[in-house]
Image (cartoon, rainbow, N blue to C red; front, top):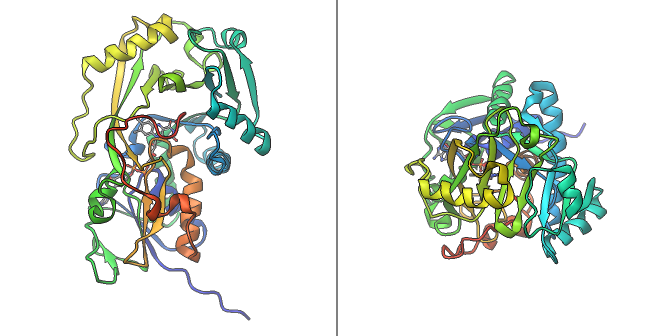
Length: 386
Ligand SMILES: Cc1cc2nc3c(=O)[nH]c(=O)nc-3n(C[C@H](O)[C@H](O)[C@H](O)COP(=O)(O)OP(=O)(O)OC[C@H]3O[C@@H](n4cnc5c(N)ncnc54)[C@H](O)[C@@H]3O)c2cc1C
């Protein structure tokens, strides 16, 4: 009988959405896994630590991400059906269009090829279906059916809890970078054969010589405005998740009574995720209110109910980093979520687990060699639409 190669033990450092789902897929393949985090799964400094994240399929010409959105959403739905169905809200997703939007036109090509259920909406149809939206500047829209809001921090906590119940070892520890020129055999006293560093915005601190300036953590602010009492206009189905690419801003309807969520998608100042203060200045609130006046006029005077300060970990063009460390062949680098990675957690985990267990070469778009220096003066969103 043919002998099957034993699977290596794996240590995954970082228990955000990328690390947790990589651990999930490694366990599914039968590997022994230790998951390690310095502050805890989806802690409130982590990029996965916010209340909610959008999932949608449109990625313009980058079809691989569209396929990953579809793959990941299937896994999310199945897993949440068995654990906690409130972790996904299928609100749909609206792309707010202006004339000649090349990215949105590319979405339509991909949607047709991959069978993504959607409607193309006229201005009038947007007004009829979603009455809270002010139409200023909009000429058309695309509505995705299988899209909406994933409950972010609760979702990661649920995956980790499930894994621990089913044999995963979880440790709270801060892992220091491996020493150059030595074979990595353990981290924080935990022995393993393979190591995945899924450290989100901390990744350039862990590997400064490789990643400083190539992954840039930027400050991002998120606002929840209180909605008028008894008014259903800011909940699904009267309001979907949405993006307004022309104004580089996106949002979600009221989920779990937290209020109407809205967040600018342009990149903020470079920050340190460990030490940045998470207080929102009044000037930022005022700026968002100006936008509300135009696009959601009923909320122009709404009180701010809650705010979050988080960070993106941007690569130069928004593509993830999934590659082997150039000097340690049993160390893998995983990150560069760039403001859009949450929805892909299970697909990223599957791809990474397969590389770790079976070897092979990563796609060029995820390779370390393609992560050139990020230009800090260019603050525009790298992947429009979250
Ligand atoms: C405001 C905001 C809105 C977003 N909106 C969306 C959206 O709508 N849709 C979407 O798909 N994506 C969205 N994203 C992006 C998405 O949230 C991120 O891409 C994703 O959460 C990144 O996950 P991660 O696991 O790489 O990093 P993280 O969640 O940051 O996890 C990294 C973990 O590593 C741990 N760690 C770091 N260093 C060490 C160390 N040395 N030792 C031990 N542990 C360590 C940290 O404590 C942390 O828990 C958004 C992000 C932000 C900030």
